[in-house]
Image (tube, rainbow, N blue to C red; front, side, top):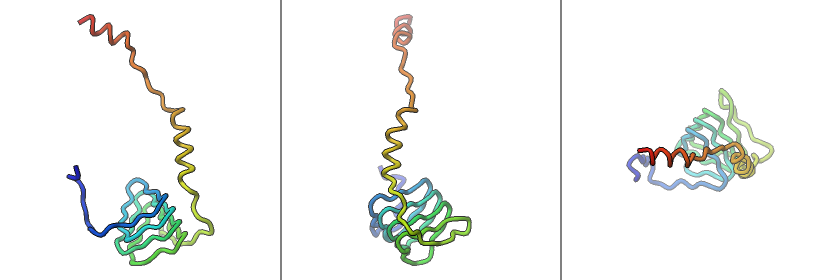
Length: 123
C-alpha cells in the first residue's frame, strides 16, 4: 500500500470541515478553511491559504502567494475574482438528498438460482 503515493511536501496541510474536492482538482495550499468548493481541474499553488466559503471554479488556477479572503469566488474562462455576499450552500444537504434518491434508481438483477442450479446438475 502507498506504492503510487507522491509526497511532494512533507509539511501537513490543514483542511477544515465540509469542503468539496471535485474530480481532478490539484491542491497544494498551506491551509484550507471550512465550506469551500474546488471544482474539476482547478489548481491551487503551494503558497496559497484558502479562507472559508470560497469557490475555485473549474480549470481556474491560483498560483500567487496570497490568502484568499472568506467567500472568494474565482470562476470563468479568465478566472475572474469576486467576493460572494452569502456563504455557499452546505453540501451535506445535497449528499443527504442523493443518499435518499439514488437507491430508487439503482436496480440490481438478482441471479436466477434455478438456472444456475440446473447448469451445475447438468454437468
